[in-house]
Image 1 (cartoon, rainbow, N blue to C red):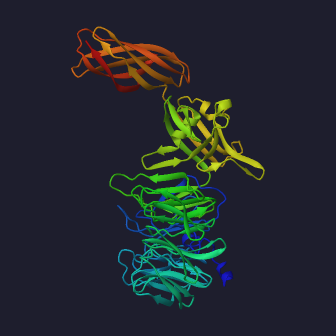
Image 2: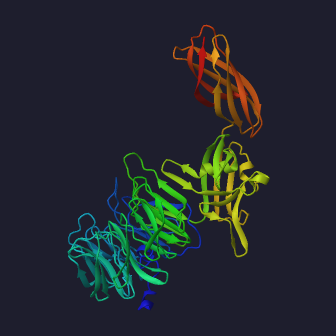
Length: 609
């Protein structure tokens, strides 16, 4: 029986297989590098399916324009190859032998020619399509097609031509998005017969068993192998359930379930909920290993590959996350930034194919994220200290260094998206050399591959820098490169290109002594420089009556230097007493008084009689 399954490509349906494990093969970690994004309009909420270098994905109801259809894209560059405008909705397609199988908003089920998008068969299955139509995603199992309809909780069995062979109706309404799951000659699906239940039938749709649950089943069931045994895992609105394949309860724990379907990998269960992503182990019952709290609900079904779990959030600023699959540590995220009044939720689940990740969004785009390539950042740096913590110890690092540029790039935002990636550092060399080692960036760390060490190296335009990244000061307009590979340019798989705009000087603090009329106050101004040269410092301000005081100093700084500059401020006899609000401004000497570089304040100066 299992040998027949080998005819179907292993990843040719929702969550990668008929068991919906969400466990994908990959040889590299995906990074927040957009290989391409293609606009198809509407809301792209189904999981894209990638087969033989083509992406199949549909859309439905849009915020503004909506050009409905089932789309075929080139997986390499995102080019639209064809569109069938008759097919639309949230059902993810299944692929078999050159044909696509997919549900539709109308309640019809389609068989489509995968080469040109033409309709081979159209058949009505859902008589009460309401808002969703057929949002269930079909599976292909042992030469038959299985899909559910929500209005009466029916499991349908069709042949590969799209003809109905049998159906099993439970009678009540079920969640529109849940799909059937298959394993060892059995089909598992959500039903509703005088209450919500999980059903198990054979391939003739004869009931083997059913199990009553506490609330509506929201997530597609998963059959996963944990510690050598197979289990049926699914969520309801209230709980996460684990049953054995004979319908006996193994354990149930409270969970605010969503339409996120569990993924199973590394003997662990990953599942989305209304407040984040959860990871459980099954050892004498379900035990929570870690939880990652998100900014809202997770409807996306997690995808696990190469030690990383990927998923997205269904909120206004939809966010794709990458976490360490073993401890839940955040590796990176890519967050959409919608214009005012729009919502860029992500309900779609990630699909991983050929070391790339594909996902749909409510911005109307299909995104492809790569595992290699160059990510470019433009950062503005100031010659000031930033605080970092390594192993519980706090250190000061200059922002205008190569390391400071990396830390600034790790929290990067543009008009339409925001990127964060994790940077981990090693301070074992700091005491002796004053520099830090880079342990990992976005989860990519030092490792030995086939006898060759792969690690992060830091380069300027001409060569690898000769000092630690925190000791290399950048000039304005300089570009720094972080390369992940064997220490050479040509063999780097990932490159972070950081273009730096560096302010020549920064004011990092100001304090002012009190003063008396006809006397002097002294302002002490802390300044740091990213270039060598002469500078002018002016400290001036007013009280609430408009009385004015000011002082000026000139000073010299070398590149990377810092100094505390005293500025003498005379208080005229004619002025009134009280509180003055002062500002410190700094200029390059040749640019004074027209080209103000930075201003700091206000700070208070108390004047008495």
